[in-house]
Each structure stands twice: as structure tokens, then as C-alpha cells.
Amino acid sequence: MERILSVIVNDRPGVLARVAGLFSRRGFNIESITVGSAEEPTYSRMTIVSHGDDAMAQQMVVQLMKLVDVIDVHDISREKVVSRELALIKVRIAKETRMEISHILEPFRVSIVDVGHTSMSVEVTGDTEKVDALIGLLSPYGVLAIARTGVTALVRSGISEADSYDERQTAWPM
Image (cartoon, rainbow, N blue to C red; front, side, top):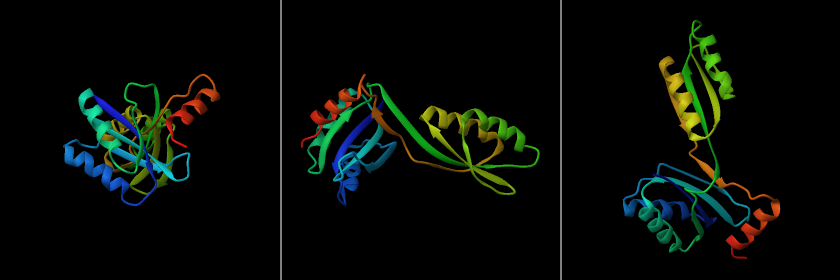
């Protein structure tokens, strides 16, 4: 089963290496990892995607919490989440295929970020399934390069903003 861990860490050098090293030592593969600033200026949020069963996920939560710079860890795999990924895709183009490719791109709401004589680069944002679907449709034309950010995710908000504020206040030590 796909596992999504949301990890709040101190924003310090070496934290990413320690977290990745923990996964490596335990023999777990990281499919994607994204890191960025969190709501608090001294924290960063990591979103880690891996595969495993409930026991593996629980073990990773316990092991991550033992790291000094880890503030909080949640396995959000079974939660209702908003998740996104960005991909840049360079695809081969020819005069004969430009219109076909344009029709493929249209429903995906991509941004064309670069066009040359023999290729074009597009930016797509969405869930992993959307990104994978576009790559699959462009593959017959010749995908020359792909750069993906990896998944980033948040648990969906409650009914009101007050709910979200209360969740944050109880989730983080002040």
C-alpha cells in the first residue's frame, strides 16, 4: 500500500540526510520526498511517499520520532488528503504531430514552458495519476525527458477555519 508520511522537522542542515538514512538503514525505499518551509519559520515539512504495510508505517513513525530534529510525524495514508505533484515533460514534436499533441494537452490544463523546432516542454500539476496519464499519452510521440517534484500533501481541512487552527495548535508544541 502507498504510504504518505507528513513529517515536521527543525529547519537545519543535515536533517534530510538523517531522515533518508533512517529509511535506507531499515531497507525501505523512498518513492518521493519533498521538503519545504512550514508555517513556523524554524520548521520544514517533509512529505515522504513509500510503499509498505501497516507495521512498516508504524515502525517508520516510531523510528522518525526518535530523531532529535523531528518534531511531529503523521501517517496520512488513510486520511482524506489534498496531494499534488509538478512535472516538466519534454516531448518530441514534428509539424505533423503538433496539433495531435495540442489536443492531448488541452484537457490536462498544462502550461507550455518551452518550444523548439523538434521538441516542446510542458508543465503539468495534479495528482500522481494525472501526471502519469499525461506521460502515458505523450509516450508514443517520444518523451525525451521528465523531471518530477514528487508528491506533496496536506490533510484536508475541517468544516471551518477554526477547526484547522485548533488542529495546528494541538499538533505542534509551542
